[in-house]
Length: 326
Image (cartoon, rainbow, N blue to C red; front, side):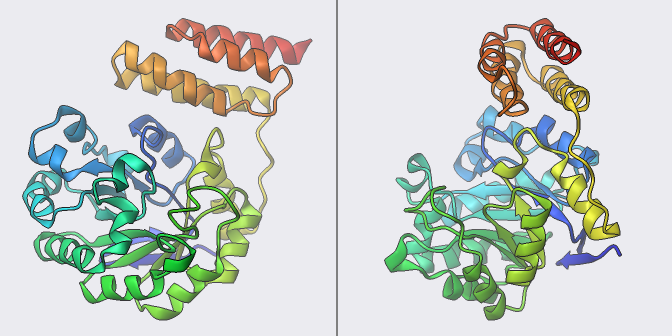
């Protein structure tokens, strides 16, 4: 049976969302995941200072296609003033949600006081959330981690204070900033956050299969789950989850022909949407992800790394299909 949740006034199917991932979840990736029934997608994280100062790269990340909806634009920064100043341009794009990144662990973000560094400065985080909620005409959400490190696990208190600021939903990645992406994600902490707030909670971390999805829903009582790295080279994971939760059916893994066709469609979108030199770089990384663990994986990776045009992508597809015949 199909189920839905609401974040503010936005209706979302209770299956799986695509996580905001810098340099990965671009428009082409989001469209592929939406085709495979991702319930909600997010922009790559966008700097509020970049938006305010007119950065072409930052403003390009704000674009939304109708096929992507519902879609959230994720913002990051450390100064409430710039969130307020950037918001007008953001809202012109008519996002369904605005998400505040308070969980990114990478050094170039946290060294400036943004991302998960905000979890060490709750008062500043409250000011940021408050100014965005006050000036936004769409629901505002926040993405968090467990805390900065094992000695500073504060996500339950932090989430409650975000709720008090008027935030409409909380996403929790079950690791500390110090853990980055190592160790097993802590799903138990997500259930504690769920018990501590009355707004929807989205669970994130180590969700790679339909079974993982079911386990997380059961263990955390989350309102929605979010998949990041578990979708790399496997955008059909969203359809598998949708079919299982809606109808109880487990879809088979795609065969080599089907995988190759999805990869080709994905890479074609990249070349349609980007300048060729950028498309070449993006396609190398994205194509490789579809073929981890394959026979002749080393040769496939080498062919991907040698992409210089879309014609090279077609050559890879021909090689893969011929290898199956042989």
